[in-house]
Length: 340
Ligand code: PHE
Image (cartoon, rainbow, N blue to C red; front, side, top):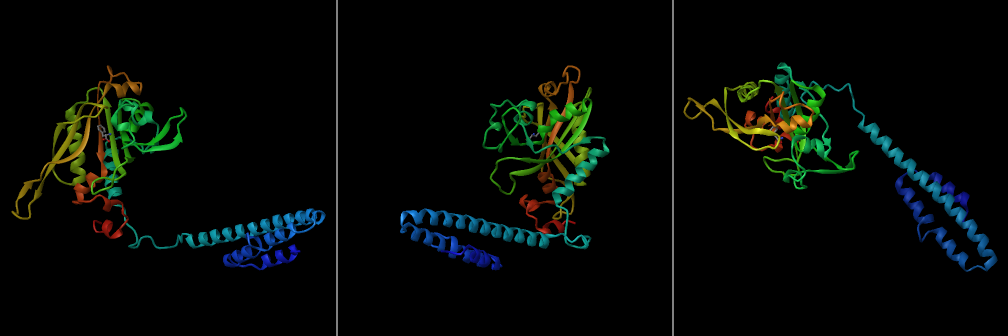
């Protein structure tokens, strides 16, 4: 009969994955030694069969265990090797040409700095949110088309009320939280990621950066809103910007606007200063009373305030004259550095 000690000794000598596989083929595979021995056993007289069967089973178990332990140790060895290779050498000189900020990050920081200098509180918030945060808290009933699968990404994880979490489809998911946390009057900024189920093309991506802004007070008018947006755009685009407001619809603002902008530039053909075409820059509007109510604020007392949702890639694309927003996230250093 097969000698367990000998087999274990052979296993001991195994030094790599190929040899281990070989060992498996010889002993444990369905055409290996052990199964062959089981076949032989079946031909034995009944009283021998029992004894032999028990011994073989015992050998098979012990050998399988030893084999698996060896397999595991090889895996750990591989992982450790990989970890050693992956160690970050912190003595490397990172001030060299090996990295660059993404243009999106640069522009986001500029926007953050502008609003911080105006004493806005700032939070990034969570990207995984409840349906309440993303929709109902900003006056979007769950029957609204925007809540359907085609542009909302649902997660398997459930919130405490048993509903699936979603990836926030806009940073407006933070409006309710910011009002509740900081109270009114409020100047708040939420610049970070949002997600929509989109087919990627030159102007759409499933992940995008948005900057949510809110300004709530007692005598805040559309004029304040317009002037703040112009101040911000002048500062980011470093150009004299002129804005125009058109009506736009969002359930969480009333009235709602689309803000277009144009700016003065030097036309290389004529050599003269001209106004650019009007470009759609960002949506916004006066905060809807239902949004205030949902956050426990009395809209009769705090009647005025505005909110806006600025798309980062759009702003960066305008600032740097980029036609395809996929350049921002493809990680190509040549692209990012050419604007340094
Ligand atoms: N949340 C809106 C969007 O993502 C933008 C927006 C924000 C509009 C605030 C009005 C006010 O499309």
